[in-house]
Length: 317
Image 1 (cartoon, rainbow, N blue to C red):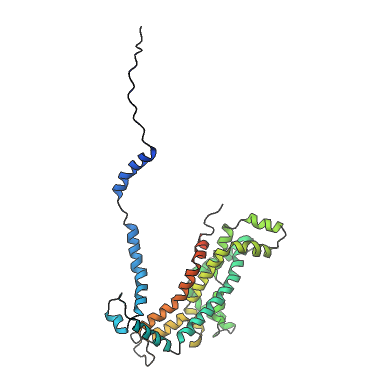
Image 2: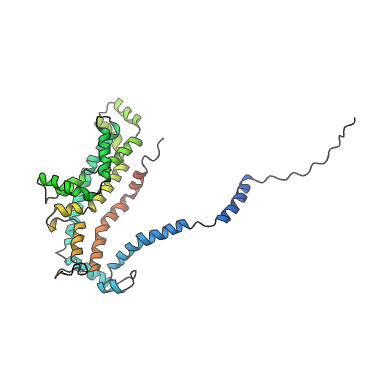
């Protein structure tokens, strides 16, 4: 049987398309079908309406007269003359009381901040790095206190401060907020997740005491989370209202948050019985801007440390 050895001419091979081209061709119809996703734009619009517009309105309200604030466009600019008049009227209220309140808030917040850092960071380190009886119960108690609203603690704190005869002093504001449970828990999370125990063991082998390990090794590595605890403590103390309102009887001792409440009570539209110390609404808006400016300045100068502190412990080698 004779075998046919005649070979047919090979058909020309189709050149293979590059893999990147095939991926692009496959992805193009899918992208065309999907179109643009409107969800990010919708979220940005909602953010603009609920967060940015009120701040813009507050800034512009300080540049208007009381009549312009009611009858003009909400987002219109008033005049520099009206801004100057509102500033002069605010400065004349109780002989520059707004600056006295700002100074009181700064003193209370920074002293409480220093004590908070000195207490919360070592406490978080001890909870993370040592084992002792009652450690879990202490962590649970810290978490429970951290989740409780501040207003619910005002009466117990008042009874405790009254028992040591500190009512009416600045320490009645500083000491209760110096022991910051959120700062303790935040440093505990950082030290237990982001700090290598081998590094601490090596320092102990080199002859460091436990306090030396904390001061020379753990504390420098925890600088971002220390800055984060300090910022949150400063904001919590600066915005504190209920505790100073209960503890401080004299107007000269009030922080700016309680001072804003005093200004609000002297606005005729909210309190018709106001006499000669009437405060108009644009002046109240200007006082509010002065009250939030220090927090904004602190945030702008510390945002790099805040981002680093928030990301600390997110990844672990």
